[in-house]
Amino acid sequence: MNEHDLLLHRINLLEFHQRLLIKLLSHPNNDFYRLIIENGLSEREVNNFYRLCDELTVKLAEQKAEGFVHFHPLLNQLSAGLPAHLKLEEVVKACLQQRLFEPLFMELRKYL
Image 1: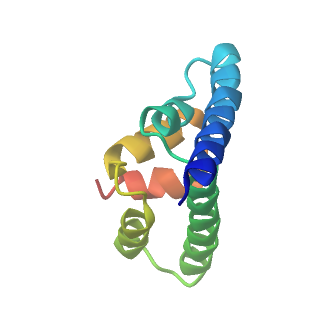
Image 2: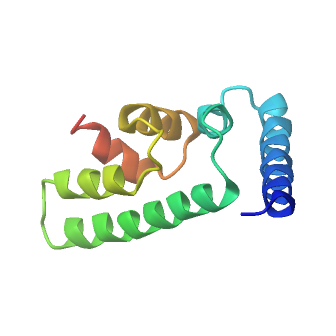
């Protein structure tokens, strides 16, 4: 990555974090946004996380419909898909607090 690309990447990251900070001003308990900023996650990393959570939510619904009662493999998939600097327990807690993917994280919280 050359200097120009690096600078552009940093500007995009700052703009993304600034948008989240504005949201935090009106909702200071949005812990997941706080985690994103504190860990320097990019918008792409966050979008990948949201996509993973969407997929896991669908799998959870399908497995429940099929009569599954243990969802530990979904927790493993989430853990494997997290950006390296995030801790699984913090993510689950922050997402529940912020009411993101609630059915999924309420179920996964049982396995922590």
